[in-house]
Image (cartoon, rainbow, N blue to C red):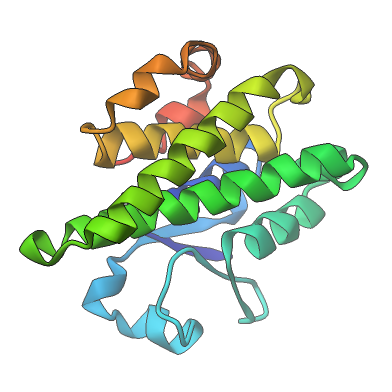
Length: 197
C-alpha cells in the first residue's frame, strides 16, 4: 500500500500515526507530496488533490482521514482504533468534535495565508470555535478510552497542529489538563516520528 501525505497536514498525520499504532509500517510505503504542487500521482488518485490518500494493493484509492483510518483498522490483525467509539455515542461525538476542530484549525491557517485579505469575521468565528471546542474536550477527557485509539490520535494531531501553525493562539496554554494529557503522549514512537514540520 502507498500513503500519500504532507508533513504539515494534521489529517495525514492521523493516518500516519494509525499506520504505526496498528503495526502496518512494513506494509505501507509513505510518499510525501505537497498537494499545492498538484503532483500527478495524487491528482490521479484523488480528484480533490488532498492528503492523506491511501492506494491499496489493488490500486484502489481511499481518501479522507476517517475512511483511511477505518480501512487500516480493518487490515490489522487486532484492529482496535475505532472499536471504542463505535460502541459509545459520547465517544463518537467527541471524535466528531476533534474532526471539526481540525477543520477549524486548518481553515484558520488558510485564512491567515491571505495576509491583508484575512476576514475579521471568520477569524473571530474560528477562534471562538476553538475556545469552546477545546474547553469541551478538556471537560470530557476523563471519558477517553485508556488505550491510545482514534480519538486520542485526533486529539494529539489537533493540539500539535495548533502549537505548530497557531502559536499566537495563547488560550491553548490555559487548557491545563488538555496540555498535560497531550504531554503524556509525546513519548509514543508514533507521535514523535510524525511530528509536523
